[in-house]
Length: 223
Image (cartoon, rainbow, N blue to C red; front, side, top):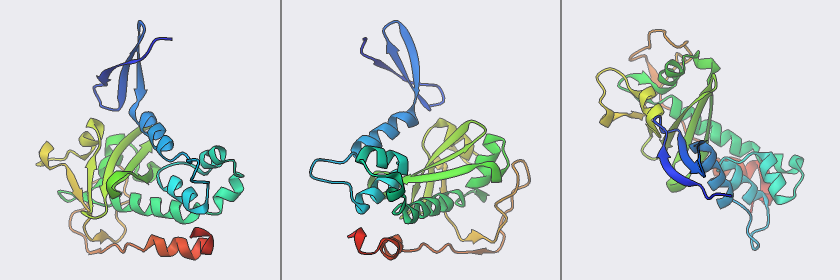
């Protein structure tokens, strides 16, 4: 079997172009990153699968099925510990999509780019290095990938597709960073193509302490 040679990225930055023998193939960049995350989270000989490890791996983007299969646990057992972590992932995805760029809400910019109603877009996030979260919006067989920094409360595009999604009038490519501002009171669910609101009365998002939630749900087994 020929050893693959990396040629570069596809024009949209979403796939890695490889040369395998006489063939040229493209592999989604997200598939490669998912495999890297799973490899990094694989149980070590001195790190048996435990409730804490289960939650770490799900927080990093693995499913309960993948964790159970890799650790030899029943999936029903793994699911006992995934609830708080899935809520945490949903929470960070929500904060990212409600961030604003030049008065426009990320959720609406992404829905417009995907040409889908905002309510048809599925959002997810997972923890990556440096305390940042990778956020993905999917609809209509397409995906937009972003990064969310909860400390700086900022969202940026991960590739050219995401940068196009965040590009609005009067904003240069050097300024494509959305910021989480006080959140609106419920006007972010409009369909793509509708006029986007500017300056409604807003409330500040509250960020719960997820360690406390995890401790309450899993009890002493989390230690």
